[in-house]
Length: 225
Image (cartoon, rainbow, N blue to C red):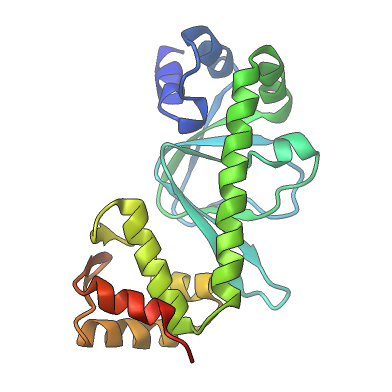
């Protein structure tokens, strides 16, 4: 129980809760482990509860009618997924898959709602996370709607640097995942990244990226036509 309480205290969603509040959640939490590429749940399934990711990373995505995958977010521990359907009564709005081995703590819907009734701060924190996800989804819609693939890719790299707080950072996405995020194909992403590198805008080694010419990359992000 003490170990679960300690793990829960590291989840941003639960930050600031008292020891008693964390223990109330820990009593209902069940450990679930997932192998790389294993599904936590599929879009459209009834919401059973919330997953608290304590080790590893998961990918949140949607599938088109044609079977094309669109990545919405990458969540790395400590984090949470499946907050929204806990309260609106609907099914899971997107699918979630383990990127690598994942350890999670699962709290079923009824137990989590009971804790929220006891400790309103938990519900307020969930609302803040849902709001952050909504803002993120709006930015994705914008990135897929406005501008060329080159512009959108440059914006994505600049946004990743902003989130990392540095012009040197790790972008844990494959070219295929970048393509699905931008609504294009892998070859187009690879071609644009190669050009950015050839023109000295970026240095790329594996997932490590260094922005070498920020002004030039910003010009690509704002270029018209």
